[in-house]
View 1 (cartoon, protein in one colour):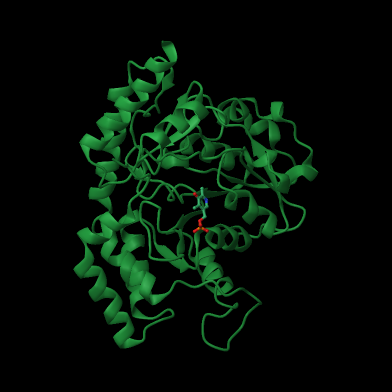
View 2 (cartoon, rainbow, N blue to C red):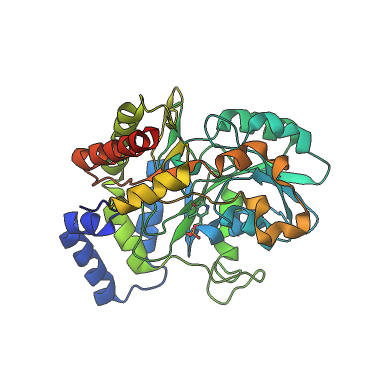
Length: 371
Ligand SMILES: *Cc1c(COP(=O)(O)O)cnc(C)c1O
């Protein structure tokens, strides 16, 4: 028996005809770059999220970079972000010439510890970049209040949180801009790289659109230098098909997360993810904190259960940030949990039986440990 960490083939099989037809149509019409399929997706995504503008870009990292650059972040600026994320979060800050300023995660929800933000604000601080990690919303209302108080831009990294909500409102709509990745394994995934920036700000939308397309809105009318970061027609057409199913898929992920929580509730060595009141957790990842994590991971591997670690090291501890001379105890929470976190199989098509098997094997592991 083997239980995959993610199984993209199962999802493709469930919508194969629609996807194949969508791809064939783009090819028949050679609508490869920009064009009607990109526009259709941008409009549908903006409407569903509840914002005025969606600008498709080449990937989620570019979405962050383009959004930061377009609000005017650059050399000499500080951008406050979180110690536990995928490197794109901080990489995109550095790409603008600004400096990432890392903040530890909170004990309960693995997102930026809001109580530590104000201490780090200086005259150089221009923006806060929280991440809604694993599909769990950051405490975005509180972060927004701090940004308003200090007149800082708020850019939300929603790469792992498509249609995650807080008090009924989609993440990505609280800040000046929200950025999304449609990497294949994300909750809403393309069949290659893709991303988007969403915003309600007309001027920002225009800047983002220009910067991501060589500084032009009309061909050969370059207002500035930009980059080439566009959403492909084929990816857009695929995303439009998948957008119709995202609520159903997110609902399944949420149910799977709750079932895991229930089944693992009485395993003393395991701490399951907490759900916050008045939020909808879309469980891009289902991450437990486990005693003797490496042993558990090896045991599950032997039993055919694939797992992963998100992430093995907090961002400031990576070689890439060595020059910042952070010490592990600068981020005590992230540092403590990095050796305990374990991501279990999670995708909509996972069956109840598979989830029960994973939970059983986890229990078996701790039973053998106790013998
Ligand atoms: C995936 C991801 C990104 C980057 O997305 P790409 O499309 O791979 O460039 C950014 N931030 C977070 C938190 C992510 O998980």
